[in-house]
Amino acid sequence: MKVAIEKQKDGTYIAYNVEGEGVIIGTGNSVSEAKDDYMNSVEEVRAICIADGDNLPDTVTAKPQFKFDLSSLFEYYSMLNVSAFAKFVGISSSLMRQYKQGNTYISEKQLEKIQAGIHRLGKEFSALTLV
Image 1 (cartoon, rainbow, N blue to C red):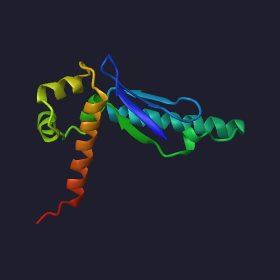
Image 2: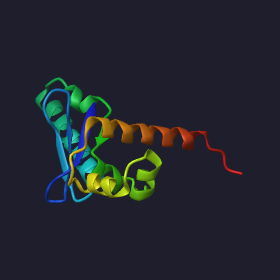
Image 3: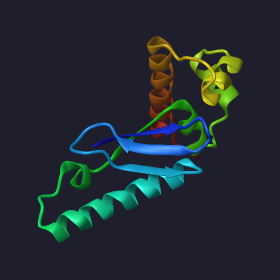
Image 4: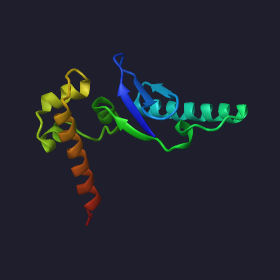
């Protein structure tokens, strides 16, 4: 179940499923709070369906796969340095900070470049051995 997490204009975060039957929402002042509230909402919907004798929709049975906008990504994974990561993927650090703040439109091409960089970093870390 794909669940989007996005920073809202007021600085809070929202998590909501982007597929499945019905929409379940969680909100919070941080990504963690929004994820927790989303999972709490899933449990509430599950309990209501069970109490009413209804079939459980896939929105409450499928494991959520969280998808982040850039603001949410850098808030949740705060150990990532925005400027250093921008250099790693070959994007201007000032532009990456604007993306993080949500002040600038991100083209599909730039989004793919950032996502490829995240995947490349993940592969490098998973192959890493400490001595």
